[in-house]
Image (cartoon, rainbow, N blue to C red; front, side):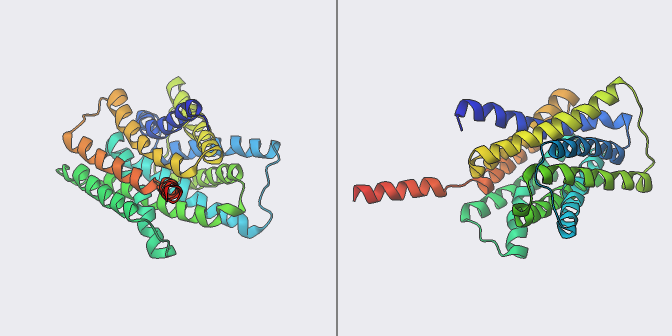
Amino acid sequence: MNTFKFIPLILLTTFLMGSSFAVVKIGLPYSSPLLLAALRFTLAGIIMAIIVIILKRPHPTSKESWIKLLIIGSLQTAGVMGCIFLSLRTITASESSILTFTNPLLVVVFGTIFSQISYKYYQWIGVLFGLVGVSITMGAQIEFKIGILFGILSAVFWAMATLLAKKWGAFFDNWVLSAYQMLFGGLILLLNSFTLEESFFILNSNSIFILLWLSIMSSIVQFAVWFYLLQKGDPGKTSAFLFLAPFFGVLTGWLLLDEPLYPSLIVGGLFIIIGIYLVNSNFKQKNNLVQSTIKVNE
C-alpha cells in the first residue's frame, strides 16, 4: 500500500481506538457505564449487520458457527468493553487505555500456555518490557482502585478473544464477524446493565453526540479502516502500529480531561509501547532480505 495512504489511515484508526477512552469518560455522567457500552455496540452492530446483509457478505450457515460468533462477542465486546467502561468510573482514561492495550502482551503468554504457539525471542522481550511498564505505571498508585482490576480484565478478555478469532476467524467473513460480535456483545451488555447496575441515560444533545460518535466513528469507522489496512497491507506491519493507540489514549485524556501526566505514567507508558511494538513486529521479511543479499554476494 502507498505510504501516503497508509499513514493517514493508520493514524485515523489508532486515534479512534485510543481517544474513545476519553470520550467514554466524558459520557459517563450522562449514562450508567454498562448501558452506555450496550447502546454503543448494539447500535453499531445493527448498522453493520444491515450493511453486510445489503452487501450480501457470506453469513454462517450452521448453528455451531453462530455459537462461535456469540462466544467471540461475549469476550471481545461484552467482556472487554464492559470492563473498560466500568474501569473509567474510578481510574483515568490514560490508565485505562494503557492497561487495556497490554492485551498483545497477554496474547503471547496465553498463546504459549493454551495453544502451544511458538513466539520469537524479541516478542518475549516485548512481554518483559510491557510487564515492567505496567509495574511502573501502576506502582505509583497509593491505593488500589477497582478500576485497575477492570482495566486488567479488559486486556485478559481481549487476549482470549484474539486467540479465538485467530483460531476460528478463517471460517468467517471479516465484516460479518465484526458486525455480529458487536451486536451479540451489545445485547449481552444490555442484559447485564438491567441486572447488575441501576441503569440510566440522560437524553440531551451531548449524550446523543457522544453515543453516535462512539457507535459510528469509534466502532464502525475504526473497525472498517483497521480491517481494510489488514487486508490491503502487511498484517504484521499494520499490527505493529497498535502502540499508537495507548499513546492517543494518554494524549486525549490530557487534552480533553486535563488528566495529569505523571512521570510514572509517561515512563511506564513508553515501556508498554515498546513492548507492544516488539510483540507485533515481524522481522522475518527483513531477515529473509538480508539472507538473500548474502547469498547473492556469495
